[in-house]
Image: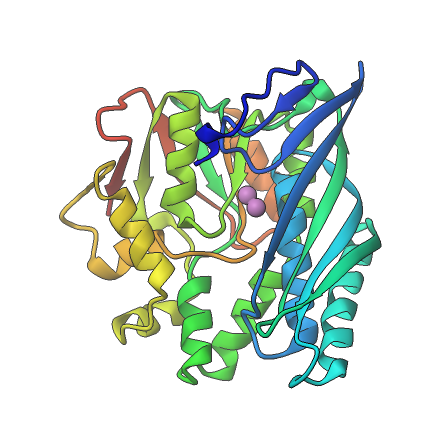
Length: 321
Ligand code: CO
Ligand code: CO
């Protein structure tokens, strides 16, 4: 659809629409550029405050995925004039504001419209050095793939809505979604990583596929090395899988070659639509060991090396047990 819009040919647009990257980057001066991104969605959890915090962590994640430092943001709010308690909106906004404060950026304004279905999110602006942009187009064959958060969020939030998930699984899912990618991003930037993205609605394999396309490489992923929130396995066996996850899997069938040893459950989890997922970094060895160790030392757990980029682009993604 974006191809039907006018082409951007301004040299100050360092990252625009054409690479399906996480955020746009616009150069201001020789050593300073703006990073801009926007994300908003309907509640993924019942508690308004937690929803606000998740939406903010998710929105700012695209700045972190580019290696940027968020500075300001604007709230985007859809909320019904009638039928819902006003206090819920206050709590959503408080959740967002507290998360912004934790991340060190300021919500300087916003806009609200009347909508029967509530939605919340942020347009976030960050800063970055034009020479240090981490994009999804800079992966090279041989790079190790490092993932900084466990999968299973789409399945677990679907199970929550169906009242099938116990308190422990719900606590874990909310913990993962409200966790900022700030520390992971700092480690990534300090290590000089060139290629990364964050894992959100298209799932691990969907976002990995975007990276392989943008970078002109293929990828190998070892399913058993991918961290998963444990409770997600039982839920996926019960069929508590969101429509988006099935759609992701269908959309990827023509580019994925699944090894026979990869279970149906694992295939769904690898395609599971995440909200506020982790960073997926491409790190050339031998520096990958150091990055893993730095992430662990900084408290990013579970973090894992889940596979590597390869030169073979016949089938973009090869998934092994
Ligand atoms: Co993103
Ligand atoms: Co986004």
